[in-house]
Length: 98
Image 1 (tube, helix red, strand yellow):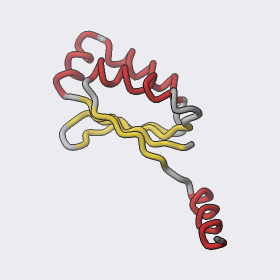
Image 2 (tube, one colour; image 1 turned 120 degrees about the vertical axis):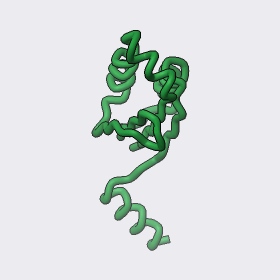
Image 3 (cartoon, one colour; image 1 turned 45 degrees about the vertical axis):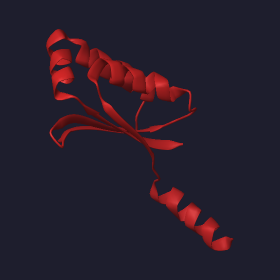
Image 4 (tube, one colour; image 1 turned 30 degrees about the vertical axis):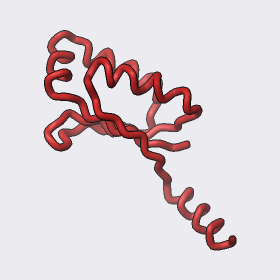
């Protein structure tokens, strides 16, 4: 299932991770696991935030993705199912057919 991961990181925890060198290691580990279609980094409500769009092959991936963000960056995380236009068109056609 195509998902969007929104991870907003604590400023204090991410500052510490940047200064001690663990921030890029955590990001590399997460992005290697996700193999995202697209990833964006921004300031969102005053926090470092990442949006990553990826295929969640199995729900068991969630702890593997979330735990490094929770424990290493004190992140607030949302996993949100998303669609591309063809998914929406298919879903609407099926909804209207029933």
